[in-house]
Length: 436
Picture (cartoon, rainbow, N blue to C red):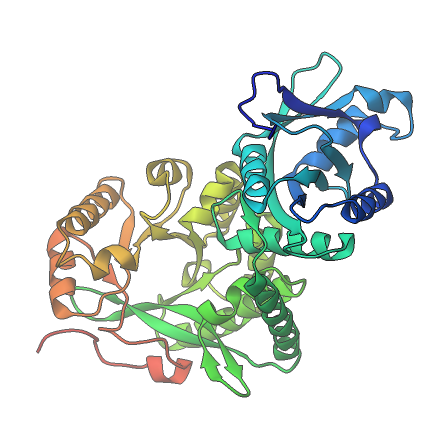
């Protein structure tokens, strides 16, 4: 009889720490089970990336070899088939082994059950603590016939989830190709940083009424030796995950500050906006900004730090502390991509930002989509009511500019006024995007 997760006799899966396999035991179990697989059977290896696992286990159990480990329980809100084993492979990683399954579809079904609800960890009678799971599934013999291969491919599947809202992924053959490409990109980015191939270009920000340039957004470009000038969409996600990300971020801040100081020698009050990488929201960023201002004699109001709304929402309290500290330095802070997050009103209620940047996706469809018009109008009105500056991104036509101006939006950025360009092309310059 085939096992069913709906079987009333089944119970949610729990494992005490003493019952967990170690990495070597897990390898031996899988390799032995593979030798016993019949032609129509499958073995599933589910690799689990568990956020907060190590901290919780360290708090519950001080000695993994002591009897106390038996009190630390991991519970999954899924009923799993007999013979399922759990292994701890690292500080934040576990594995579930499903030794005998009827087919690939059942393995995928199990992965979905395991990740549908948070994992729970508890010690003795204590209250269970929920932990988030991200999981990758590899199945033998479809995806490999050894433990080493299955584990590597299950880990590849987890890596693919970085750009997804899903909680688990099943290994696919093109994952390996993409992993090779990511590895090659990392190597090229390391060389790019060492050889100074990164550049900053500047996109003008203008007063919508006059077309006068009032600022510029500093945007990274990679002057690739073979592919030419590449925009951030081609490399930034990979760079953010690399160890040298902070060095590059500081280089961006330094370079933008030097340019802002040079421009302000000609035109006091011109601001330069700098995007920061998501992991940089914190005291370290504030310290770097303070140092750069002092090193280059830059007035704080000439620098603006842009924080993407979605990243601020990942840790709203932490972002609020960072914004508050930056504001105390006198630096302006903008909430970028405004309107694309799931809690925009919470963000502006919590963050002491100076400026809201309306995301280009709303502006682009504004003249053909009634909902976009309503959203833009509402966002502009909201900003005015709470005394925040509003800048609309992605303005490409005079019609879009005129509608935004009629709504009360005072600042804009987009191809109507100019693409990102080298510093000497931007200033000095005549009014931009103004009808004669």
